[in-house]
Image (cartoon, rainbow, N blue to C red; front, side):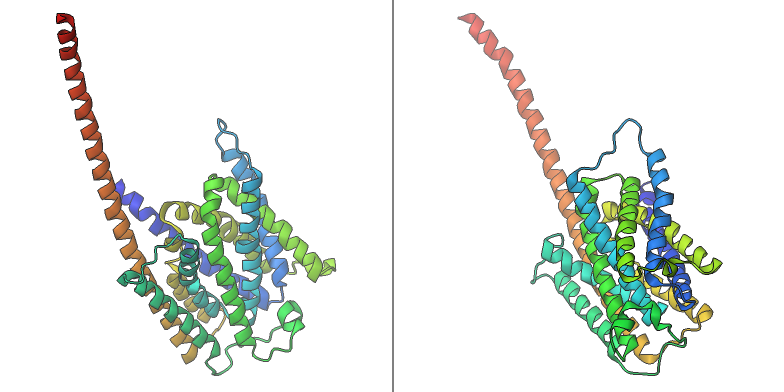
Length: 369
């Protein structure tokens, strides 16, 4: 049973990477078909809310009241804004301008960005004289450098499909010639948002530990936020239409699996293993997306992108090696603390027993007088 509890988060993360890969492939196919990225985000969160709200309501414990205070409300609002609304909108812009394989590859920066953000906040231990800290810093540098190389190295045009410019806010509002670089910058920004979301999850789950209700609230707030943004950028209701069954199916799948179920599992894993562990399985998503994108979307792999992906993965696992050493030290420290605590309890019991033994003797001596 103990082994199953240990491997359960690992199994969940592996399954999630395959589901994320399917979401990425179907989403980009919908975008290339002509669907508006911002409309996709809105309907995805709206459908996720319709699915998650009744599940959260009927599955909660009837003996406990599920209430949300102002602190929890603003934490959830901030987490929804950064980790869902902004992250998904920027990600879809990058996915639209670049490719599915580039999106999954650059998303591997999440552990490195998470490490930097967690170190600044104080969630990650920093000891410049420690080998594991040096490894995490070096791995972060390798990840960022590889991502920059992936975006900046020139080569043949990677996009094989003409992009309808009316679907992209960034493409319409600027005369940016290098679409690939612009897409990579969007994907990097989305990775930063997701890393900040992982960090914010620590106080959010402490303030509101009900994972189902938390997921429903996040989806609902993201729906309101993305709807407000969509009204500003696309005020005409004709732009909100879903024009094919495939687009509807991809939105529904992304809503139920990508937004609903994944948020529950992410919150649970973060509570069990921490934010860095949640980000360590991203290279598997890169492999899945690259294989399926080359088969179904006819995306080609070039030297510059391949070198960048390899560098990102190497840097990622250097960071994870340092994180693994941190976990080993934490376990050793916990074992020492448990031993000290047990020893203190034994000493207290001995002192109490000695006091109980002395008390009758004192009573007898008092009675003599």
